[in-house]
Length: 281
Image (cartoon, rainbow, N blue to C red; front, side, top):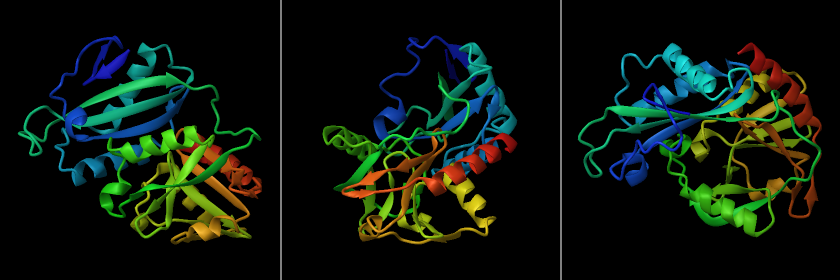
């Protein structure tokens, strides 16, 4: 079942057409949200990011579109798919309604919620190889739009195809200043000694929910020194650890970049703290 504007529809229902602005212009935003046994992880952070992004894109936010409303709609969609008491991924997509060319005739919005079962109720990772390399065919433009979770993800699509063609698990993206910005599906952190680096939003990285949580966790730990700063590709091979964060996986350690092998000690330490933060959110 798919939730379209509060109505549960069969997945094969034809409820969109060729006028859809998300299809025509990528005029859309989305949130990928982890839900476990009916508990929505980091709901407030997801909601506030979505509202902020809608304002930046000048979408009209309906008065009834409160955090409580969003929670109710996600839970209803999970129950409609028999996932109310299981771990699941919910994707909330918001798009401007049909009409107009580049300039819309209205800023009113519609939403879709679809859900998919996850295997593990906890953030976790297996000790398996995870290899990445740089994707240098196209670059991230470092501005406010690049920090939003929009449907304009062609760079990520092409980069994912490149990764598959080259036997990689993921790729790291660069901005037009040749700084490392993020992975194809999440934010990037670099560990060297007790210093943990992550690119600032001004470099063009996504304003990730788990990125924000990890920054908060690190800020409360005496063992680590967090620095938001640009990361050069040359720093990657000198790092002790690299890891990727996103709202579904949590923390994904990188074990290999080119000829360099990485450890996972800090990743494992932070993973337990992230699970605690998620349960308390």
